[in-house]
Image (cartoon, rainbow, N blue to C red):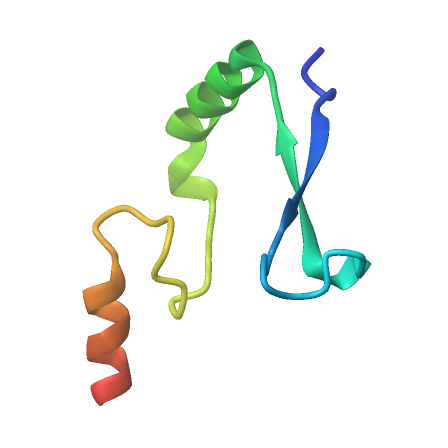
Length: 73
């Protein structure tokens, strides 16, 4: 149950060639219980996860303004 998901193809560019496989990205839809379990594990072990200092999205207390400030340096 936790390892299962449904992959849904999403069009990247609606004005582009919708017959091209390069114009799609896969989004995995997981169960609510799986998402809850993942959140609990991440909350418990978030101090052990490392990411690049150049990543600004999907990080606590970081956003677009931090990335823009970094570009100005």
